[in-house]
Image (cartoon, rainbow, N blue to C red; front, side):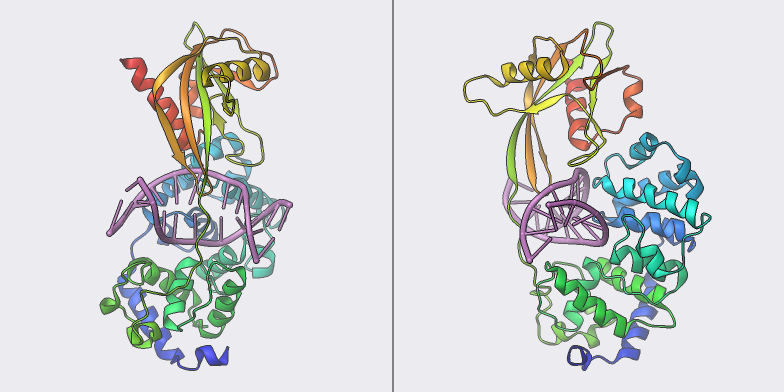
Length: 362
DNA sequence: AAGCCGGGGCG
DNA sequence: CGCCCAGGCTT
């Protein structure tokens, strides 16, 4: 560690970085104040999600659930609806569970103790450091992808940042260089720099406030750092899905299991189609009958929907059908068109609904 | 350590 | 269109 940091002028680096942040930081809703609950919600939303996407979700979420008590007491279905479209839905289930814990065990006050806060559901080393430093000014590292990118360039660290072990290396390094008198601005400055200047491709080194401290820039290596191993390609699946209505225009929908992909979200009934001998239509009709006791003759809808996840691809063929009855308790629920809006659907099934509505009009 | 878990932006 | 971005949990 001494080796890695030996070239860095720590105090000057801190000053240049923090000075830049205080002048150039973006105005963002979660920066209005340092309410720990607001900071926490924003950090969870910002995991794997860009700022522009998060802003409207954050505003809506804070309006509906303005404090820990409100979220703790909220109906889970309503909370899922507020997260609809953001992805990684376990984030919000864990958040609500953790906030309930804060509500009950900490009298609604987010603990200002990294160890205690870090034990809460969904709070890993990054979220722990971000919330503790930003909300309570506690000098805890908050190592996210931005920070690893920035610091790999500043310190010329060439370890593979995809490896869990490398995150610990950065954590140790940041613990040494973090500004003890202003860890909040220091951590935010590193992330802001990664977002605005020290970007993944073609970083704006000429505008960089810490260029003079950057060993990668000095050696012309800013474009080859950080080193990151590639992930594998997605698997492709063929699915058949059915928008089923009854004679009164109600819809039959299904709630996904509480674990696994898109847990607890709602969907149009569907199955993976694998048969070599049956048509997709026949295979889906058979599935609907066996799984839900739903008898129907399906009609194909033109066009197939592709939805790409990080680890798999769905190719969905869409059908419509009329169903009047289904087995009670089998999981198929009948809702009105009006009620559809209250249920949280993943984007893939929002696409299905949209295609159905488009075709219905014609 | 490796795989699972969504979605969107960019060149 | 293929490429990239990325924390926490589970196994």
